[in-house]
Length: 202
Ligand code: ATP
Ligand code: MG
Image (cartoon, rainbow, N blue to C red):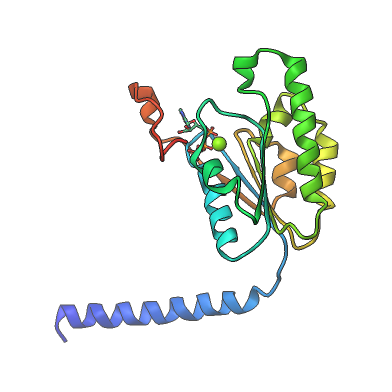
């Protein structure tokens, strides 16, 4: 047998074994449940991943809710696309970045009012997917009561998916979550002086 032929035969055997293993694992995964997905870490890609899942969910006709806990300076494309969509209830916190407002009391008031919108979505069995974008900062700054946030997440409808984004997700949030991805920063053009780019950053 030529080298190529034996290599091809080895490849086929390896792929057959891999397929058996994967098919077995797929058969074992029979549980259907609402997931808590936490996207954290210092790298870029947390919110855009969450909105990718929103696009998927809306594509499937699911009712969704979005609550953004930090209002950016730039109106983001996902808000422009989804805010008037009949399947999406979209809320954005009234204040800007905490380093812009520099007003702790006003930030806390805004965070609490925004959290009430989130709480409503987490209690609504008709809402199948909820995005809590940049929620982690409200907990690290102590703007929201950690225990009531964890309680509302735990007591949500059993088939409701929730996606939480933001850096430094707490240990408790990670423990409660089903999926946790930590996005690392390998490179970011901001450090080369590149400003935010429409479509990529907002
Ligand atoms: P995205 O919304 O692009 O998925 P993200 O949610 O992971 O980003 P955030 O921490 O929410 O990141 O920051 C939002 C904005 O800051 C985006 O414009 C993003 O490109 C930028 N950004 C993200 N990570 C970094 C970083 N490590 N350094 C500098 N800027 C960053
Ligand atoms: Mg983000």
